[in-house]
Amino acid sequence: MKLSIVVPVYNEEGNLSLLHDRLSRAVAGQADDYEIIFINDGSRDRSPEILEELAQRDSHVKYLSLSRNFGHEIATTAGLDRANGDAVVLIDADLQDPPEVISQLLERWRLGAAVVYARRRHRAGESPFKRLTAFGFYRLLHYLSDVHIPPDTGDFRLMDRRVVEALRQCRENPRFVRGLVSWVGFRQEEVLYDRDERHAGQTKYNAMKLMRLAWEAICGFSLIPLQLAIWLGGLVTVLSVVMTAIIVIQKLFLNMPFQGYAMLACAMFFLSGVLLIMMGILAQYVGHIFRHTQNRPLYLIDREKGWDNPHG
Ligand code: UDP
Ligand code: MG
Image (cartoon, rainbow, N blue to C red):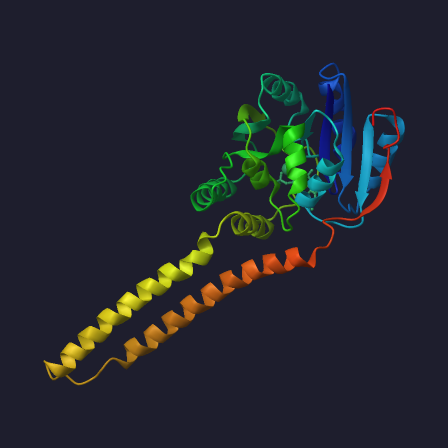
């Protein structure tokens, strides 16, 4: 049985040696053979040199370097495209996810699960704000779409080869890998673990980037925002019919003069607001279609190392 471990790396120079040590120790004896695939996602620090050196020294290490920073989701995809193990583990490079948990993931896989999520028991070093928004996001996505992404799970997970092959068929861009894994189906189970704090360096996700990821997830997995136009349009139409009826009755039967310019202005602003919001949502979906029809490759590879070694 062969195990593949996929690690996206963006400016993680302070973590790589320790990560390599801990990963190697954690998987030794767990599989007949293993490979650790590092994807350098356009790092601007010493990460590429460290990774090349690791690939030189350890024949289990394979190294891919993308031509620029393509983002976490794409870097992960590049790794999954190359992983050829019977089981594939996705793990972040910052040591927030302890490699020692991999043995538990493998255990559940051996019992028949196709995907084993590592779900955090608690989140060390994360603000109440991040926890609250994450909670809200998972709820919203579940409500809006068919994919159920279990809350409190990051990318740390094990996937059977069948799942990885299914993911390879999904070439959409922008992409939300966690959503795709849920969409694929098969038997999915979870294992609880304690997430550590980042070992070195800083998170690459600020509030803005997280919001963009959240929107891309919703846009990629739900059509409900588009249907909002029908509901809002219906509501406004009913309101306007009621208002017209009231005005006609006032004029014809109660002989009241027309009045309410302020109301007219309010209604105009309200309607323009609704229309602009709906156009914005429409534009987002059109943007997705546009990106998709451009049909560019998801990523480009600049350098690679370690692919011709005996663990290929
Ligand atoms: N990462 C990447 N490309 C990016 C941003 C991040 O490959 O553009 C990698 C990063 O090196 C790490 C993982 O994705 O291994 C998760 O990133 P981070 O720890 O910053 O996210 P957080 O844990 O804060 O959500
Ligand atoms: Mg992290």
